[in-house]
Image (tube, rainbow, N blue to C red):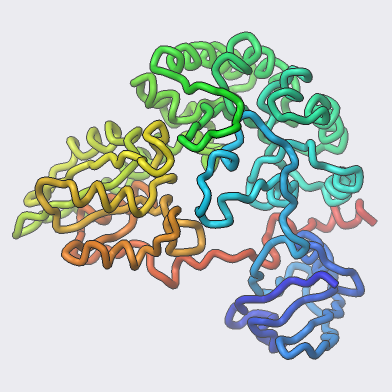
Length: 470
């Protein structure tokens, strides 16, 4: 029997009242077995509950109780899916997992193509690994919105790029989602010479016709590492190519804004960095619908930074000279340098150090793929030792103080014992660090534990949805 293992119980919660504890497993709710927290959340929406629990010692117990409709269990689980994440069977031309070197942590080698992770956490799915019962479950629970890897609306080209005949059914799959009133965000990984140019125009046009169910379209450039043995030959965008894509998409954005007031299609920050052009103003991102996909991260960072400088107490400066180094991927160094040039804090000197990614290859220039080893090499090579170092928190694995090469953050700190090392997650964190380094503290061990919530609000069915399902 599948089960969800509890790893934490919230103080004062229903779970604590029921004397549930870490290590206990939820097997069923009102006789319904559970595949994931989606099942748990919908089943737990009843007011009369029978909870089948297996305790850490193996003993099973049925807990019967009444609760309010909206009352949550208040437990956190080790995984959102109790039957394991569904992996992808495709061999996409551009798949980043196929470019990960051996010896990296196991999570980097997981090809996630699970619609549940798409609904819960915004992971992208191709829909090619979906079965009939998966579509039926999406329809029954109205799991919306989803995040769909489209890449191209040309059926033959998509089948080739994803290396599966089922990929050619993209229009039919989207039709089915729309018939069930399921909304979705779409993504294109743009590969020069394949799905760009006229093919990109076709994709944008066909997806725009699918509004309002198609909520947004993100276009990100293909990323290539030096570990591409046996992979389809691809090339990256250069400065001229990136600028051409920006001009092409600006035409569609203007048209979309004229029609609906929203841009609909958005480019990854890398295009602007490559072209040496400023990122669009905040209003053109329409609330950042695909921020976790890297769409508008730079603009969001700038807005957060500027707001923080307006809201935080002004710094009195430092009595003793303070030299800090901000580590980042090479692509964002110009942005950081521009922000630092506008910052005036007496006694503070800031260096923006772009770390060359020797681990994955120097064409990989984003902060989120930096390794501890490369960052340490960059620090050792500095001509003048700083007093402190700021590491991008996105370089740490979500939920753990662990860098991509399995170096713990504490091990990183021990490797530079003469330096104080802190992390910064966004513009506000960075502003706080620079204005008040003495009191600033970045990520702490007890703050990085990120676990699956048992009853996330977005899986709680509204009463009208529950009545419709019944």
